[in-house]
Figure 1 (cartoon, rainbow, N blue to C red):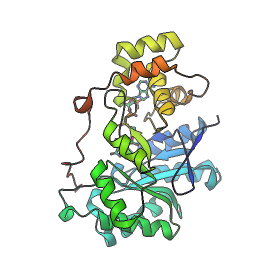
Figure 2: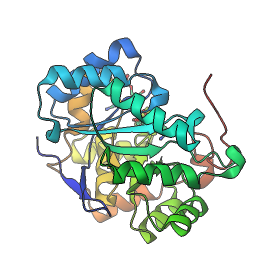
Figure 3: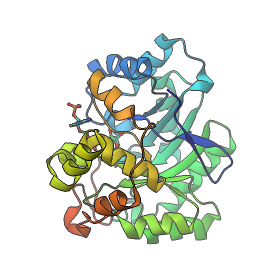
Figure 4: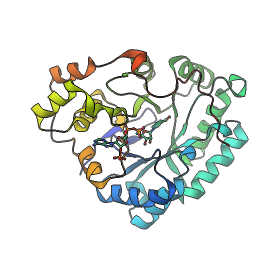
Amino acid sequence: MTIPRIELNDGTSIPQLGLGVFRVPLPETARVVADALEAGYRHIDTAQMYGNEEGVGQAIAESGLPRDDLYVTTKLDNGFHQPDDARRAFDDSLTRLGLDRVDLFLIHWPLPMLYDGDFVSTWQTLVELKKEGRATSVGVSNFQPDHLDRIVDATGVAPAVNQVECHPFFRNDSVRAANQRLDVVTEAWAPIAQGRVGDDDSIGEIASLTGRTPAQVVLRWHLQHGHVVFPKTTRPERMRENAALFDFELTDDQMRAVDALDRGEDGRQGAHPDTFDYVPR
Ligand code: NDP
C-alpha cells in the first residue's frame, strides 16, 4: 500500500493516512498497532492522555521496521503546560515510546481558561524541542483561529499542523480557513464522526453508487479536501477497509453532497476548545 504524503510548512512531510489510538486500552494497544503495521499503516497518532504510548512503542520495537519508515505523533498532557513540565513530559513520552525522537509533537488543547491563559510559552517550548531535533515537527490541536494567531504573532513560528474535530457534520470551516491562511495542515479528528457517518442516507447513497462503504466515502472526502486522517479502529478488517482509499475518487457533485451535510456548531461532537479545561488526575 502506498500512502501519499502531505508537505508541511517546515519542509518535512506526513503520511496522509494513519491509525488513531484514542480509547484503545493499554493492554490491547501493542496488538492493535501491530495489526495496523501489518495492514500497511506507517503513521500512528497517540497522546500522553491516552495512556497507551507504551503499547505503541512495544509494537514499533517488535515490528523491526526501520525508524524512518514510521511516523509517530504524540501530544502534551493538559496537566503539563508549564515549560519545565512540558519538557519532562516530553522526555517521558520518548521513554514510553522507546524512541529518541517523535515525528510530531502537539499541544493537545489550548486551555485558555487555565495557566492564566498562557499557551504561548508552552508553544515556545515545543519550538525549542523542534530546534533540538527531538521532535521533527511541532504543532497544535484544538486551536481556534484566535489561538493560532496569538502563537504565530508571539513567536513567528506557525505550527506544522492543527489537529481539530472535522467530519461531514462539522466541517469546522472557520478553523480550516485559518489553517489555510497560515499554511498549517488540517488534521481531522473523529474523521468518520466516531462511526456516525454510517447512519446518513446521502452518504449511504454515494456508498452504493461507488461500491464503497460509508466510512470509505467520508475518508476519501477528507483526502480530497487535503486533510490528514487517522480513523480509529481495533479491528483488522476495518483497518484494511479504512485504508482502501487510493483507487477511487469522488466526483465534484459527490464532494458537494458530502459538504452539504455540515450542521455548523450543532454538528460538533466533542468539547469546545474555548471552554474545555479538563486536567487529568
Ligand atoms: P473516528 O471518527 O476515527 O471513529 C472511531 C469509531 O468508529 C470507533 O468506534 C470505531 O469502532 C468505529 N469505526 C472505525 N472504522 C469503522 C468503519 N470502517 N466502519 C464503521 N465504524 C468504524 O473517531 P476518533 O474519535 O477515534 O478519532 C480518530 C483519532 O483522532 C483518535 O483515535 C485520535 O488519534 C484522534 N483524536 C484526537 C482528539 C484531539 O483532541 N486531538 C480527540 C479525538 C480523537 P471499532 O474500534 O470498534 O472499529
